[in-house]
Image (cartoon, rainbow, N blue to C red):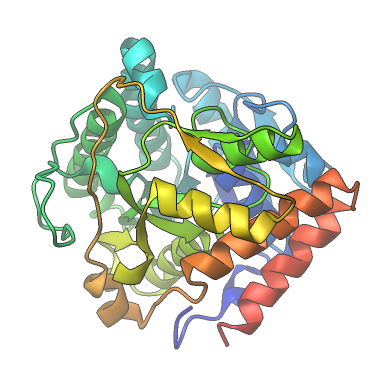
Length: 355
């Protein structure tokens, strides 16, 4: 992970996570709780059925608040009670195709939701470190062959991507206008497409694969030629924890950071489906069901040299390993395994490779 960051930093720290009932949020909270952090979560009810948050039995070990980030008054109340030192903002409407169906809700959640979180941070004296998790899709997409850098233009195309570009701009404004002088370190993290066990969302390639193969059907791949930077969910989560903890101790480390895999792990959706089928076995197969649909970028990758040079960070599971660990998780779940214990083992296995 990093040559220098010690994750035991989080022992006893008060951490508030928005979006804690989602896929990334559930993995993150499980990891934080295992590190001994005092965690408060603020989110809507789990967005899927089944849902990872309850599969991992997290609620009994943390303070879980059901709330909408569009509700500023409730956010103020939760911040006042939790007195967090570190705030990790993951709550969002995260699906591109959904943003075409519900653009107003997407902007309300991803833009005004961010304004509300930042306002709660501004008025809460305990906060020292704030991290806004956005996306690799914040950049104006020129479909070029090289990776986007943190200094490139922010101008997402679709309502989801654009709302996340706006969320970045709101964060930069609050940082310069208020948070710097309050001594609150602020970063944004722009991660690529994440895969891993426990994602049950609609319109995502791995959950679609699992739903199909578990019912003995061929996997329908709607955009097999689009290239994406795929990484296991633990890769960006480790980077988020490192960023928030490092800037807590040294504010000069704060900034905007791309968090993505190496160039070799930028593969097409069809190649990902091939790897998934090979890893799953049991005659798993996919078919090309391209039917047009709303615009999505065809080629997208990140230049992650900034986070590498600043922290010595680099991913440790290549895409083939990431898919293997993901398949193992879902097959264990389908076999009725204790998924909290299984998830903890995957976190430990990941950490062992990062010493």
